Length: 446
Ligand SMILES: [Zn+2]
Image 1 (cartoon, rainbow, N blue to C red):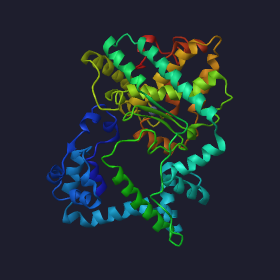
Image 2 (image 1 turned 90 degrees about the horizontal axis):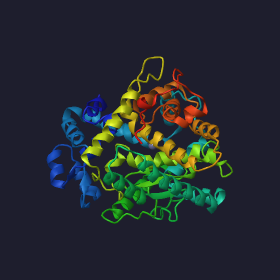
Image 3 (image 1 turned 90 degrees about the vertical axis):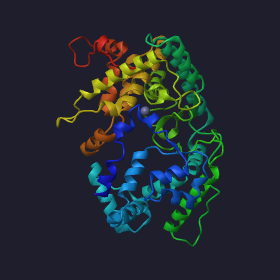
Image 4 (image 1 turned 180 degrees about the vertical axis):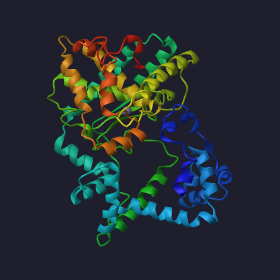
């Protein structure tokens, strides 16, 4: 009940992924203004107790959410609030509590996502420890399984993709010279975080007491981490340390705040990258992902940040309008896709940034492919397709289609590839075929 009341004041996922969300989320405030916004709920007091009030800059992402929380903070709701706090703490620390508590928790998760197998004890122990000390595990992994040549090769692939993206921008006839040059500046300033960093996170702020309980250790860690964050407050950001990046996580991403692409070994597997893959597979798999991450710098959210990662409008009004028109074409197209027989539509608004990035990534790699004589396009497209091959429960898929910002896996393949002549030509796809999309109906933004 409390959750439902609070949810009314918080922007939904699709609204948070809307381009207008970013400027609306910049709301610098003083401590005095926090007190005014929230006279009942004691946010200002909590911040003072923890030392956060010493921050030079304080931003509130959604002032309406704080006002809503304040309105709900009443005597009448006291019991529900106490329950909510208790449940939140219990869920956060559930893996450190006793076995029956964990069993109840995992049962609910498994039902919701249609999981058939419980994570075993060793996996749970490993995941819990890695969550807290990702860089310790990463250093061990790098020492055991990777060498400098992998990092050199992937860094080069990123560099080549960034240079090729400049050529891609040259092919966009709807951009003015001025905006195009600003976009190129953004590419020139892009940081490449490839494979592993030169500098690692320091965990010396925390040590485990030998005779303590694991839960006590976990609570001590939370305190130490908070103090470390407070020490970092008001300082400069050391961009050599990849803060909050677990390189063993199966992920690759673009960070608009530092203008960096992050390509990490947790993402490498048979389908994504092997050093002995032929070039077509490297381009079709990891290459397309690298291109995807670069494209995020120019999706409707990323495009609002400049080459230094500052929120700044570098677009002319006309170019901005042309860009928005292209994005809404893509959004409309996805809105009309019914993913499953039950009639659940896909939300174009929700998936637009990721779909933009998918298409930009493949276009970038196809431009690189053009420079290679005898390039095997069939091999390239098959490698791209394998990237999104998944076994997924229907339950998980349905949860995802309501809230996930990525299009469904089959859409990432079918909708992306039908935008390109190279694909249609490789498989002799013609007007009247299911995968055919006429040039005037194509929706790739870049
Ligand atoms: Zn993405």
